[in-house]
Amino acid sequence: MAFPQNDAYGIVVGRRKEKLDSFVNKHAEGKAAAVELDIKKLDRTQPKQTSIVYTSSKLGIVPMVRAPKYGASKAALHHFVLALREQMKDGPGNVNVVEIFPPAVQTELHDGKHQPDLKNGHQIGIPLQELIDSTRAGLVKDDEQIAVGLAKGIFDAVEPTRQRILRDLHAQLTKILQDFLV
Ligand SMILES: NC(=O)c1ccc[n+]([C@@H]2O[C@H](COP(=O)([O-])OP(=O)(O)OC[C@H]3O[C@@H](n4cnc5c(N)ncnc54)[C@H](OP(=O)(O)O)[C@@H]3O)[C@@H](O)[C@H]2O)c1
Image 1 (tube, rainbow, N blue to C red):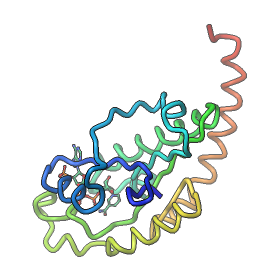
Image 2 (tube, rainbow, N blue to C red; image 1 turned 90 degrees about the vertical axis):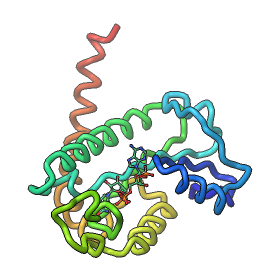
Image 3 (tube, helix red, strand yellow; image 1 turned 180 degrees about the horizontal axis):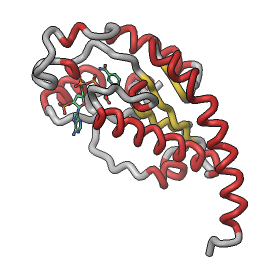
C-alpha cells in the first residue's frame, strides 16, 4: 500500500493548497516533493512493484441519465485503463494498473456547491470510511479492479464479457498489425 510510513511512494493531487499542506504535515513531513510522472519510464525509475490507481465509477460502466458528461468522462477513463493495463502486461516492468469503481459515496461531490439542485446531497451514498475499508481490502489482495457496494453488481454483470472481448480483440489485432507496423 502506498503509505509514506512504509517508505512507499504515493502521489496526492488537489488544487486547495491548504488541504495538500495538511496531508503533508500529517503523513509525510520532510518526505514530500514535486515530481514529474512519466508512465513510460516507470519500469526504469521504480525498481519496486508500482501501482497506478485510477478512480472511475459505476457510472463509467452504465451512465446516469442526470449526468451524461460525468458518465462519458468515466467511460473514457475506464477504456483508457483497460488498454493501459494490457500495454503494461507487454512491458518489461512490474506495474499494476488498478481501477476503483466506487458506488455513490458521501463526499463533497454531491454538495450544493457542486450540484445546486440537491439538498443534503452529502448524505447520498455509503460513508467514505466504508469505501476506504473496501478499497484497502482489495489493494491488500493485489486486486487490479475493485468494485465496491452497488458498483459490484454492475461490474459483474458487464465487465467479464467486455474484458473477454477486449483480450480476444487485442490478440487478433496484434497479429493483423504485425504486417503493417514499421
Ligand atoms: N462521491 C461519489 O459518489 C463518487 C462515486 C464514484 C466515483 N467518485 C470519484 O471519486 C473521485 C473523488 O471524488 P470525491 O467524491 O472525493 O469528490 P470531491 O469530494 O469533490 O473531491 C474531489 C477531489 O479532487 C480534487 N480536484 C478536483 N479538481 C481537481 C483538479 N483539476 N486537479 C487536481 N485535483 C482536483 C479536489 O481537491 P481541490 O478542490 O483541492 O482541487 C478534491 O480533493 C472522483 O474521481 C469521483 O469522480 C466519486
